[in-house]
Length: 327
Image (cartoon, rainbow, N blue to C red):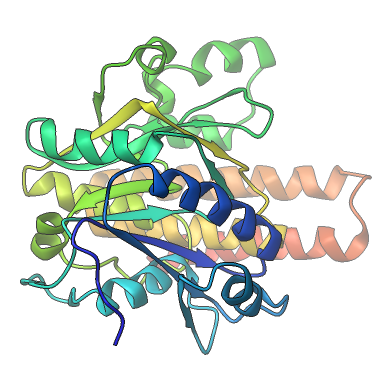
């Protein structure tokens, strides 16, 4: 039987990301070794075909590897490991679980001191239930790692093309769900609505209270749903700027563009259905239908797309439109 650590369990879900996750584990274990924490790592592999589980066992035999029998997605994949730690589908106690759980994407590089900074903040900040790291792109440039809960203005900015100059002005603003960059530049944690799902550390008590991920979300928006539930029971969520992690965004998630588009908007629709009032849902559906029609026209005119990809993208947009009518 796997021994559960007292301080921290790290969970990562993989799908055909062998080299990415091996690099992630190298930096993760290096930081854990100097953290002073009793910790262990769980990998849930979503039926990779690139030898990910065997490579992890060979290079990092201390890792707990769980092989799923299908591609479960992000939410259900994380839930497999959370259940192994003693958490349940319904809110309740998990007496043997560690004090904290850290969900970490496989396309990350953990910098020295990042984990301890998150762990200390989680147990020192007022009413903190979840914390996230400051993220950087692969080239070291700034990456937004904290967001406000999605609203209609953010949806409109995402869907409708604007002149580049105007979009550039609005991109960094509250209208687009962003927090000011100056908050990331300091060393003081700041309150947020939700972090990017690449790094999320939670107290044991939070998971006991709100339960596991909602597995209706195959990929995308599952962390937003979780954070909405966490905030509803009065826990606070923070970004910790002194915890620095590189996030090689896109290399583990956007392998099939039409499927990614459909997964993203299917999850967004589920989020709106679950958390938005009726008037806001209907407004969102109108915006989405209009935006998808614009995307279809753009794909039809895009000469750089080959015929099969164009057809698949158009079909994905049409499926999203159909989903709004059935919602």
